[in-house]
Every structure is written in structure tokens, then in C-alpha cells.
Image (cartoon, rainbow, N blue to C red; front, side, top):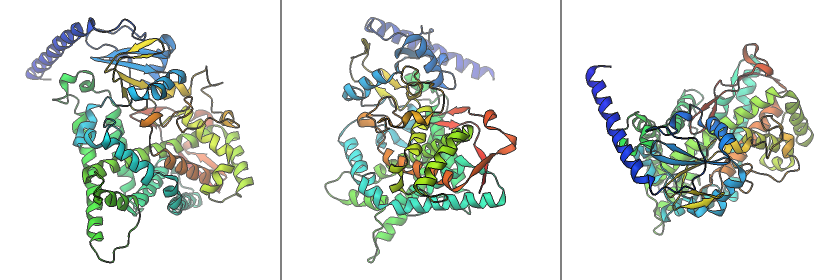
Length: 500
């Protein structure tokens, strides 16, 4: 580092220190003494250094010491972490109205996504309009039922690809194969085209792009903890995310322009895919939805609907291979109910309780977004006997709740049987299991995600007898480490040789 850089860095640190001291002194008199317990903050940094590179794990360990509701000072930001289902219910249901808005990471201000993205904008007429479109036009049961053939076709292609690998004795990267299927399934549903061309590297590039987005959004960002730094983007996170967003938005723009041109033809036949639906809505005089809103809605659909689905399937397969008796048990169920070697149909799922239990158990152990998305207190709120102050950032640690020994026996073990005969599901009503969140900000795409995971996982394990781990790896030596971004990734991809 040259002398000028050292001087500039020193000036920046001094400036932030003075600003933080002023801020802290100004707040000290007004902060209530009824804050939840938590670790003592360091000067300037607060508790930032305690987060580590896997915050969901660090925060879970801290909750064992400080309890199910704890407060941390992350730079200048008061943050409250919820680590029990009981307290989560207070935040997400009892006081949902007071916690329904987000603290917005500086990263998602890239390309003005925080202005248009449904996951981030405040509850407002614009948000309600987007939510209504999702609930009634995109993810309604009748709409999803009408698109079953598309999902069946994409799963059929997945099985065909894996079968070719089985015949040739080739290794299959489960996460990559699932991502390609999820991407094509979504792109068929939205655009009536396959974005993952089998003759190109599109799927791999798109996966890297989506993971790049989640990784950047999930990174600790100084600009989030010291708002004075937002203008200079000190770590370059917003700049890099701008590049990722721009690539996706440019792709969507090209596809939309092609559709607009096609719609000008007199004999154009409506595809009734999501894009036609959204364009029709935007052209109705009583709806207020412009092209920017459509593009940013699509960005969220593709980012959330591809990576989370494929990573969930990869974790499920990894656990089944680590627990061969569980794999045999679900294969026996599939053989009995639908017949060995057949694809799972959506109408079959209700008759496959053990398959459903496997997916619930996977969501319990590996929630796709382990800290969900942050909430913000609109006013001082009493939760669990403590005060969550106005403006505080609130995280619900779904990872900690899923492994709470007060709720689950043998919480770190993969035991799908715990869900047999249980009414617990992932619809946001049972706070022991909230991989999609709960309340009005619950992920609207969860009905599609559940259909996709059931079809892909059930079909894979019903069509192939055995799976051989690559390079002499055994079930006992499998690497189950995680990479943390906004979502939870398997650090070492699951690579296996399928056997007929």
C-alpha cells in the first residue's frame, strides 16, 4: 500500500470513528435499558467481529449463551436476532404489521432494485399490487395446475440426461443438473423458452451469475453498518452486484422486446406464460405496472426460484446418500405407490408421505435462506419481555430454530420419520419450520418451489437404483460443509455416478 493510500485510509477511519462516537453519544440517552441481552460491543466495530464467515452458525452459538432473543450492535446498527419458534411467532405473526418492512442492504440498491424489487420495497399500494399479481396470476393453484405438463417435460429431460450419464458411467453434478432443470422449468413458465441450452454453457453461466448475486447480497458490508459509507461503496459490493443485475436485466429486456414484436403480428397466439400475463396486466388501464417493475420481478423470480430449489435438492440427495437406509425406505414407498422407474407426477405427491417428510427434514436442517430476509421495527415493540427499538434490524434465525433441541429430538440428525403423522408443514403456519418465512412477507413462490423439489427428488431416486460417490468418497466421509451467502450452498458439490 503506498503512502497516499495509507493517509486516505487513516483519514477514513478517523472520520468514521468521530461520526460513530457522535452517533453513539446521541443515542445513548435514548436507548432503552430493556434491550434484549447480548455480547458486549467493542468500540467502533460493536459485535461485527463475532459474525465470522458463517453468521447463521455464529449467531446460533451466541443464542445458546444469551437466549432466544438477543441484541447486537453491528457498527451503528442495532440488530435483534430471534432464535426460537415462540419468539419468531411474535415477530412474524402477532406483530407482523410492525415488522413487515425491511432494512435494505446497500447492495440491492444496485440498478435501483430496492425501488422495484417486491422483496425489498415497503408495504404499500405498489407492493400490494405485486403481491396480488403473484398470488392470483403467477402462483395460484389453478395456474400451477395448468402448467404441470411443462414441469413433467423438464423432469423427464433431467432423468434422460442422468440416464445417459449412467449408461456411460459418467459423474453427475447433482446441484448443476438440478439448477439446469430449475432454470429451464422457470424459463419455460415465464418465457416459453429454455434458457439452459444443452449445447451451450448458459446454465453454468447463469448459475454462477445467480450465486454471485446471493454471495454479494449476503456478504457483510461496511456500508450497511456505517451508513455514512454508502456513497463510496467501500468494499465494491454494490458495484459488482450492479454488473450481475445488469446482465440479468439485459437478458430479460431482450426477451421482452422479442415478445413485444411478436405481439404486433395480427395472428399472434397468446402463450399464456407469465410474460404474456404480466404484459397484459401492464396494458390494462386499471393496473399500475411498468416495464421496470416487470424486469425486477423477473429478476427476483429467477434468482430465488433457481438456486434455492437446486441447493435444496442437492442437500436432500447428500443426506440420503449419507443415510442409505432412508434412501431405501423412500425407494420402497415409490415402488409401492407409483411403480419402480416411473417419474413422479404432481398428483402422486399426496400419496408419498415419506418423500414429503424427506423434503421437510431437508428444509429443517438446511433452510435455503438461514437468516430469512431482514425485518425492521417500525416503532418500539415489546417482544419476549424486551424492547426492540424503532429502526432496529431484526433477523429470524431459521437455522437455529430448525436445530433447537427444545423442539426436535436429535436435532442435528437426518430423521425424516419425525414428520410422519405430523401436521407441521412449510406454509408459514408452524413456526418450528419456516424455510419460506411467514406473514405477509412470506416468499410468494413457495407453492411452485415445493412442486419442483418433490418432482425432481422423487423422480431421481425412483429411476436409479444406486448412486456411487466420486473418487472413493464414502457416506461416512462426505463433506457437508456450507458456503454462506444470502442462501446456503453446499461447499463441495455433490458428484455421483448414477447406476441403473
